Amino acid sequence: MVKPGKYRHFKGNEYEVLDFATHSETLEPMVVYRPLYGEGKLWVRPTSMWEEMVEKDGKLVPRFSYIPKEYTNTLSQLWYDGDEAKWEKALAHYHTLYKDVSLEAFMEELRPEVVEQMSASEFYQFLHDKYFVWKYTAKNRLATTRSHLRKYLDGNQLHQLEQIHNKIFSTDRSKATDMLTIVSQIKGLGIAGASGLLSILFPEQYGTVDQFVVLALLTIDELPEHDRLGKMKPEFLSLKDGVLLEEIMRQKALELNQKFQTNRWTPRKIDMVLWAYGR
Image (cartoon, rainbow, N blue to C red; front, top):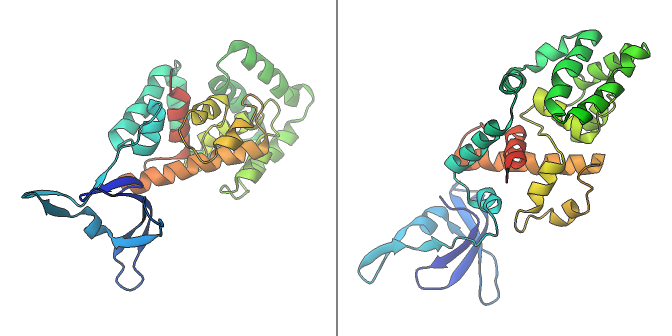
């Protein structure tokens, strides 16, 4: 399978595959590339031709051979060149780290329609007894965030939580800015906490964005968003930060599904891999 990156032609010259296209008349898949010598103009070549074997010195060799990148760490190698088995292994590593197996299973099996049908008091109890415990594993952090959440009860303000609850399920789920804005209004949740709840409810569209995801992404070689990531305060993510991080994870999930011909990969699974990296 042809993938972006550098290749060596069987005659010695090097080329870089930049993208892929489809011929407008024949629908034949094409490789978009440029020579790494001379003027470096863009060219296209049929994928079948790129992948074919040719004869050299009496032996069949690939017309173009992929030149593996030299990465500075294993996450970079996984991010760019990891096969499906390696991604599955990285995902499985997450499950070896999260200690409350039953709570993790509950969250993975939770269906959004169940939460949507909750009353305001039921939604409060779900947040207090389940979600906050899942998200804030440090006891001091859990106590602090729960104290904010309890203001809904102490101040007789459950109607405010009900309004937020209704907005979560009536807003276009694809709009990360709107969804993160709404959920982060829940007392005790910032952008990281809001993204975590969205990742539980809508894992096909959201992953958890937090300091661990930011720090993991910063280690990936040549990541286009590296400069913007470097300007973030990982423990105090802004709405703009959260939207960018969601975009990165959505794009990676899309790439993996296309690469592996599946629909298994979601932003939630990408965040799980990033969270577990290096632990």
